[in-house]
Length: 257
Image 1: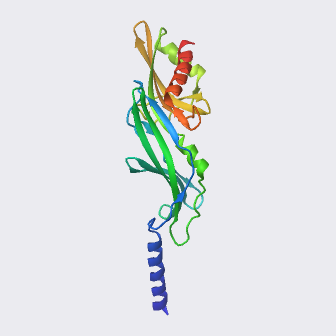
Image 2: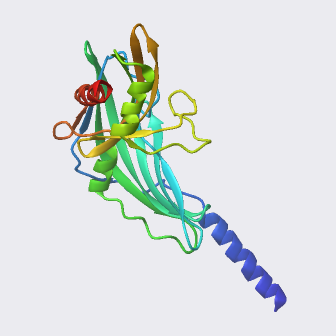
Image 3: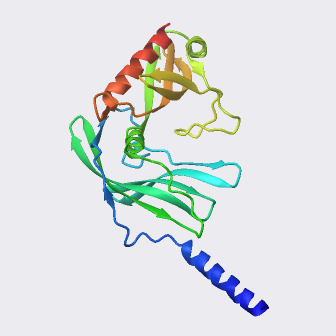
């Protein structure tokens, strides 16, 4: 009897081990109908180069635990080829899980004024792992579109001011929402420790940035290192040239106040 129970346990372990292997071969992709998303990136000097999933455009993968039960909710961006990537929504227990993967193709076109990226979603596949799998997480075409329009550009603004550095920095503390930085947190662009991280509204999004001021000629120079979130400037288009100019106008008003 013990021998039979032991063999049953071995069989179950073997099945569980096999089931925990992700196998996408043979999965039939489901075509989708999502409009192409276009990013326009200007050839401005302030663009901080080559930080992103596609050239200078960054997307943020996320992962966080959901108590109780040790479940993890994840959103991952995964490079597949030099002209395609996957947006992967997944839930798991640290080992086995389930998910949905959207394949996105893209092209990059250069011009005298900068370059454009056109992203075209193609299809999705789903999977479940383990004997008792998690349900495939809900992540529809609207969710995909929201993610694809959220790409960020890191940018360095430089503004000259006739006022002294202390006065200019005080303007930011007085006029702009201050999120603050944890003692161990470093700026993503420079790796430096800053005391304050500021938040500036931009259409329906928020720009997070840090500020440095120092003496320059008879006044000061203001350096703003910003993460500019993707925001549609026209349907299905994010034009960072337009967004940079809008932010620059807001910063000038703060500096000159």
